[in-house]
Amino acid sequence: MTETRGSIATTERELQPAPATGGRGSKGRGPISRTGLYYRQVVAELRKVIWPTRSELIIYTIVALVFVSAMVAIIAVMDIAFARAVLDVFG
Image 1 (cartoon, rainbow, N blue to C red):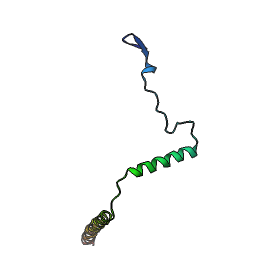
Image 2 (cartoon, rainbow, N blue to C red; image 1 turned 90 degrees about the vertical axis):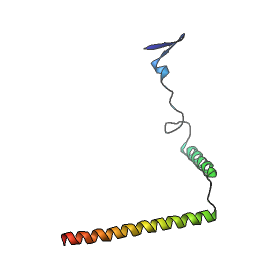
Image 3 (tube, rainbow, N blue to C red; image 1 turned 30 degrees about the vertical axis):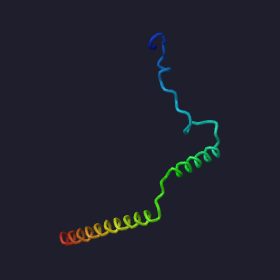
């Protein structure tokens, strides 16, 4: 089946997008070359990261520990309450 666009006739096959190059089906690079490319890209991405200062890191760590401790305390209290409730109901 053909479509006419202006003065150019195109088939359905021509209208489909071409497959992307690279990825799993990529040929022409060996596994060592692909591994090297992968690590170069990882290093390039890590250079873009904004790393926290030492004081920010300490603050973030303290906040995380306080949050985790609070969650542990809440779950422990709920666990004790449910355990007592189950013992009261089922004896």
